[in-house]
Image 1 (cartoon, rainbow, N blue to C red):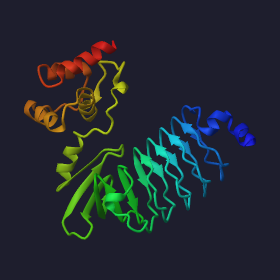
Image 2: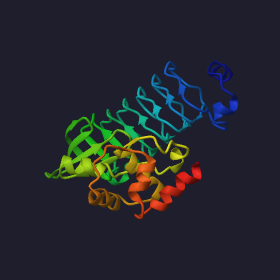
Image 3: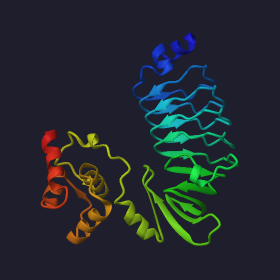
Image 4: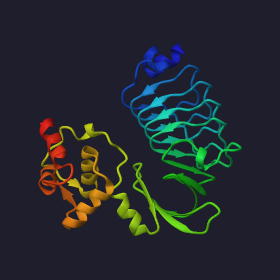
Length: 268
């Protein structure tokens, strides 16, 4: 353990996960890790060359966790991952596998799942794929993939014939519906992150994309997707970019406008 700690340049407390390792931790050259290594990493943790992990390894990772070369995982492996969890070389998962994943869970080589595990019992993640992408679980539905191209999936529910479409922006947002046009429009009004703090201190004259503005307004005000969509359509808004000050002017007197304005006044 001491040699491993010295090699990584971390403290014993960081090795055990008692003290957080800020930023990223790239360990892609490692082929093994010692027992007891359980870091808490603020950013990305790259362990992409590991082919096995010791029992008890359950890191907490703020970004993504890359374990893409693992061929097996021990029972009890249930890490907490804010981004995506890459387990693309696994062919099976043990009973009780239920990680906490904020982004995608990549299980593209999975050929079986534990007996009795149905679509209602899959881990609580945004996106789950197995049998080399033949099946996915996303947006609360377990589906067979008919085709997939550039974030657009043509799907059908298992044992059913009716097709539907799912679109993702690659950043944890998904929408599904009966046509690609409908789904892409719906995706504009979805938000995956309700953390207001990321908007503190931004330049109120800086231009943001149409999609970013919708996410910003809904995150700060709590405005619903339907209300936001109706407002934009009723106003005939077509511009592709806006500043915070422009949004304040456009939304004056409408739902959330005072809260939105106050948020930036307070931050200045």
